[in-house]
Length: 481
Image 1 (cartoon, one colour):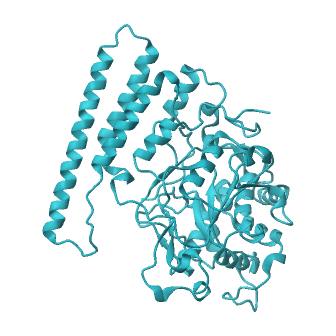
Image 2 (image 1 turned 30 degrees about the horizontal axis):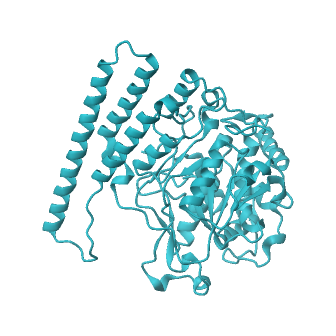
Image 3 (image 1 turned 180 degrees about the horizontal axis):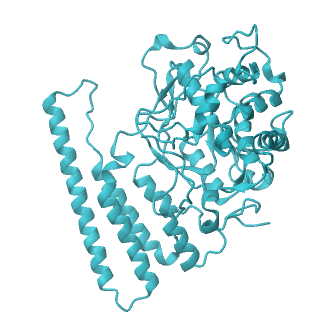
């Protein structure tokens, strides 16, 4: 059964304090050791193992898992014994140990389901042309800073383009390869106000009134649609952008090398436009990650824009809205040109238009044209979640370019960290962090790295009250000017 978009508040990260450093290090090291012990043995040969070998492997994996659970049980017993011996100690120390106990029990119970217990990701270090990253951020924050650090460590892009409303000085200080772009300078003939005006026109048509700048989940409706338009239009309008680039939500933090490519199985299926040059797609398929939340409201927009075609989902029925995506610019160009040529009253191509034709020199096309049609295609019954750039691109790529894109075999990320609301509350109410209790910490990132996740999200706008986050205030978790 499909999951629907939740509108509840979400948790964020844990406490870090010098008084807790030894406890955190102890837990992180032991979790890393347990993770290592839980890794299944993999054959070192390309020849498929016999049935007897497979049975031996399964027995080894079971034995390793049982050992891991015994170790976790001992740690749980040690922690509970320590709790009983802490009578008279400060309640802060007791709360800290109780938190550690919860983490250990969680590991003890659920460790077999973590992505780190399966095969490692394909290396992203390909001997091809470098790729760029494009991301959007309202302000420079402690989360964006960690995202930039993680991208440079685990993806190693040539450039990281960050599109924002301003304060480029703060973004450029994060890394030497950050290129800051002010949002209204990216698209030649479209601004956030244009998007807001179009949305309010639709609102008035549906209900007689509406405010596209009203804040919800830490964002405005106009801002939410505008950032999607910017992501799609960046492919056309950022000069010098790599032919294959990584679209990345800057509130997602990489923890280890990302699974972005896998070797192409059939060399004869290489598209003709990739036969020359050193694009990574010449020898590898781009992987579309899975595990996103299903939002059925996205489906109507895609059906309108693409002649009744249905949205693509993963094999496990999760969505492909995974907060990042490898974009091949020719595919994005096809999408934009099709939307431009649509008649938005009937949602069909205009008379005489050939669906398969992609026009050259398209940079002169009006952004207003396709952006307005994109907004008009949004589901009027749920305008807050009426369109998804990730759903649109991934579905089209799988339907039209199946020889370039493939689905991931498993989910390797989490949208929110485990227990993060406990951590945020602890930092705010116990440790007195009245500035930014939801900033990522090395302990929390290390914990999820040990669990095998490739990246995790910190969407503080979804829990703005607990995180003390105000989208109108710049530099969350950073030194203010």
